[in-house]
Image (cartoon, rainbow over all chains, first blue to last red; front, top):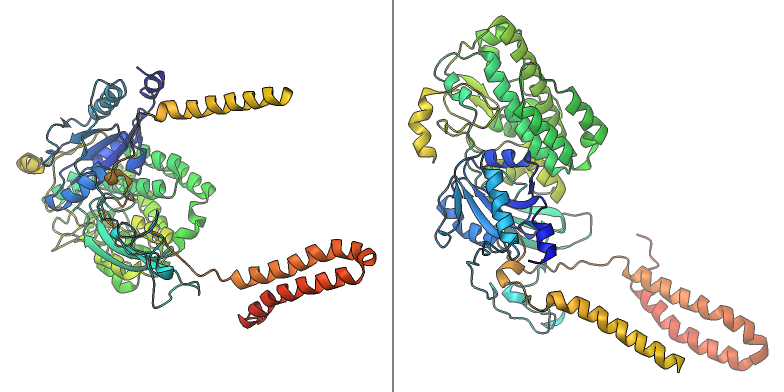
Length: 439
Length: 115
């Protein structure tokens, strides 16, 4: 065996995660694993991990991503059935065994004991060559021909930039793009780095909340449990936001805090780190302002970050006993939303401490405030359509920061019964009933 | 003789360099088309990603070059002018005439207008 391959087999395993339904649980587990390096592009990966069930309408995209890993690579499927053409790949269901399985697969691949995954798509240009010259540059005049069957991006009609008119480039991004909520895909037209149009084509997968929120819809639950689960949900979102901002160490701190969250936890260390790292001074988080109607439509922390004083916890006798009043921001922009998330984590930890000391439970069952938003008659629904309204006109970086700060995915109707290490120990009798459905 | 030795040393080192690059590459074929496509998280592009834009500073660059060339040649010209006399004067006149075409063009393009 080549000594270089031998050396490479002992490095951290570069894994590109393709997230299916409820696959983010595996992502968080792997992010904290010392042997795994999660990468944001298949170009940097040697192992493709498909985590969670992939709906049939995303198979085609999965095939494209699968074939973009450089040879040699291997594929591992976690808690899902491999799609057609990929039946012969490794399949695993145990979350705790996942990092070890990835390491084993990678070592075997490097040592030549495992064959590289086969390419699924045919090895021919997706579009036939229609240009002239090596790079299609020999077309009509300045138009530059039709390289790879795709016309050159053309000058646009209306200039939305600062006078520098750029060609508009239309493409579809997702559903396996790391900066989007899992499962979301959009058709985007960029003019340079500015978003000209945004059309959400596939909405994000419905997200599962901690089972304690579903139990709270059935019967009173201890507020301490509920608030810890809420703080954990926000910390998970913070992890993705900080990862996007390039603050890898802070994002992992948020994740570690979420994993070991208890009533004695504090947010001070993370808050101090964020202030010092300049996260709140980033230019990219100054945009994405939500109007009052948009904020109301989204609900939850995003609405409160826009100054709307709405929280179903205010109507709960248990919360009133603890002296609860909603915290709000005024800006309504990305920065205000992240400040709101931090403030709500702080508030939740404080409420959890008080509730644990005084043994307080919720009183309302059919009107609960989930970390995603209010759940009274209707559960929080998908709000991806909002992105079509607020993203056009933003620079690309601002747009991604805005998406990360908005929790647009719907909430699933019933819990999925999968628990990660460190998540709420409360078990729901309903879990067993739906566990089979969740796969 | 020394030159010949140096030439062989150069040839040998070039050969070794090229061999060192070629040896690991010899079995690798070009990546398949599906791998070479731009990564869009499973999405597809509509048009080619070559994006063009208007270089606004182009006329200004043209003007800078026109005047800079003029100055570059006028300094050494000034040194030999006394010695060469009328001949140098005529040569510089021709040079400036050609250069002024560029300046006139830039003028027409509106480079002297402050917007």
